[in-house]
Amino acid sequence: MYSIVLVDDHAIVREGFKRLIEMEPDLEVIAECRCADDAVEVINQHRPDLVALDLSLPDGSGLPLIEHLRSVSPSTRIVVLSMHDGEPYVSEALRRGASGYVTKGVAPEELVAGLRAVMVGGNYLSSDLRQRRAERPSEALDPVSRLTAREREVFLLLAAGRAPKQVAAELGVGQKTIYIHRASLMSKLGAGSELDLYRMATERGLLPHGHG
Image (cartoon, rainbow, N blue to C red):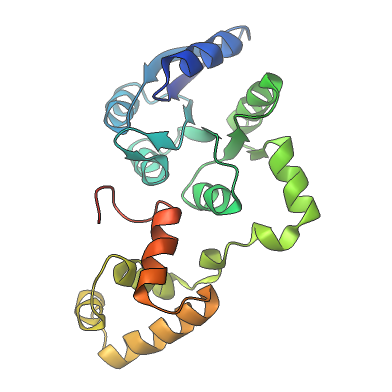
């Protein structure tokens, strides 16, 4: 029997997913959570096989939660269930450790198919996302994903409002190095200012909840 935790702030949605999942003889919903804090507590306690996670939660974006849950319970697999079907959300969710992404607009059977694929160690994207990637493969590469690890660090710190001098001190490098990384990442992202960086980071749920 595979244990599953549902994380979604809409009770009706959770109930629908639960009924669908529990029609399968080997799948069991062991807990339901409506916010990120509840999810962390429940997953830390139960270490389920899988978490089905909505990205829009009342206490913040589900994107940072993916990483946190993976650190709390590395063996727990995560499938995102979301109304957001934009490529930046999908790419970022997968980068942070989700193994599957199912949009809420697809047929219910796709949810079960996604859960099963992920539980046996695979990855899964719902049919609408697979079709879009096949039609427009260039969109599958969010520009943020093309940044180097160091450029990404600089990007997030600048987007959070740090001055280059502060970023240099925080990362233990010279200011000149930060300006080189800044020029490179802004070119890759097509950004003209720190405000653009802030907008890009917030659109992707990359800044800590409550910032700005």
